[in-house]
Image (cartoon, rainbow, N blue to C red):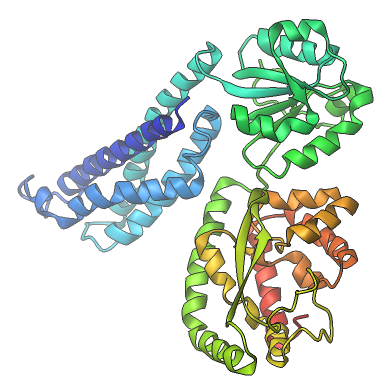
Length: 472
């Protein structure tokens, strides 16, 4: 499967639909509704708004679709959801176009305004959705006829694993799972399973296998007495937001409503959403990160300059301090801060700061109280290694100690780390591993309740803490 080509199909059609819808609408409006103002059809081409719409509107529509998440997971589109997403995007886009370009046009009555709005909406929505429906339906037909599919890893090696494979392989409407192989949990292997797919190793190798075979789905089909292994494996996988996790349910799962079907003909599986928020919220969150960080660096430039000078002249050493932290998907990055400690403060090894820490400079204490040392991290946000709101990043040295006591810490690595966090607001800076584990509760709560509204609340409380000088 070539995702770039598939995405290009949707983009090309969306651009075409936007141009055609605008052209038809503009001709209709100028000739039919404003016929008293236009004596010649050629005057339509003389109107600058027509050409602005032809060249700029398609790009604006595509930007809206990107924010909405239309071009993500282009091989997994559901036609009913596509209808809903196209409807709301078209409605929002037409409202913006109407008030930005058309409200000041001269017309004969307000009735014509409503007619203009309805015509543009119907034209754009219909043209856009018809093309998308054709592309999505053609893709679905290729999946159902096994011409394309999703590389899938089966976790399990006994009767249940073989039964799950058979059910998925023989279902009335093929769901697109292309099994690259299976891995064992406890060692025993059903010989029938080895006849239909290769044995790739055991559960400890799952991350390496995902990378090697570009796995998109992991299906758990293990026996009831092996289920204590599920949480352990999911903790490893939950650091990723690019793999869909599915589990074969038992009767209790069905009774309690854990099983949600997306198709009448597909096999019942419990699906774990790898991304905590809707796609459009991720897009808005990233846009807010960029805009807010640029404004912060601009507006706080006098504070930035003052802090830099004070760091320089208050103690010998560099102004900035870059330290390796572990971020999104467990990848290391350099986090930037104003230096608040004396040079070689960690010559004896990594250590967390404490109240009355002798390693902190006098001005460093003031910076930490008002979080001034964090200002350079807006640069990390602009680079995309951090977000405004997210779990605070830690060093691998301390992560290893936390994971020994609380393996669920690794779940935090499925989102970008942040300048501020729920744990930071509620608990402050941790002085030891015990406090890190305690603060973890709030960061896990953030993960389960992640939304733009939650981010705004955390930012507001952070501002209050900074103004009150309650930074720890």
